[in-house]
Length: 241
Image 1 (cartoon, rainbow, N blue to C red):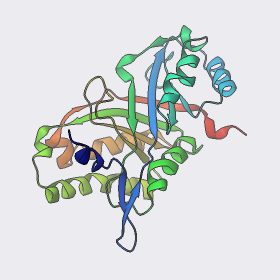
Image 2: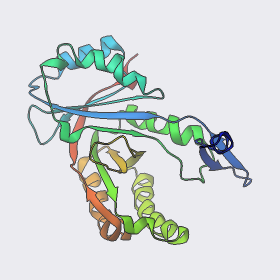
Image 3: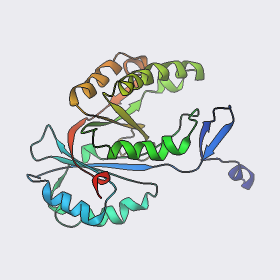
């Protein structure tokens, strides 16, 4: 590959200002989701997370009386193989049983029209993880079918608008908010995206998934969806004074 070609590669996130001007932003937030079993008491985990000043949230699994999940985040992915790795390799986390089927790692991304890229890529996802009113969560990965990539750009926009409209409607009603992450090449099962649905109650989050089943993207252009994790917050980094 020539030096000229390498110099033309632009990996920054793109947006568009209110005046139509193109925006560029070379930061994004990485988030990792890990689930565990064999945890009858979350208190020791919370104490360890507080001591380590971890940036994230801890959930108790609604489908497993001894299940928990940890979401951590950083703009630097080395955070996961330094601070988080050390934390997980000592008690109380090392006493737990990992659930690798729920392991997810993704990065925030722009769609190309966001007027404030720092808000969309960094501040908003963090704020949603920390928000004490968003006590319930559903997290899952997905992979698009090749048929979607074969559609024209205009067809893709229409399909994505239908899908996104459901999320925005639930958000305006205060029933649920989403976190969207790309995981191309980061997921062992070759998934493309990770979705986190966060809200004050569990039922509306289930309804979001149900409504999205009827969209063209889900019904026609998804190859795989899940596995799903559903749980409730027992600790958030944003609650730390």
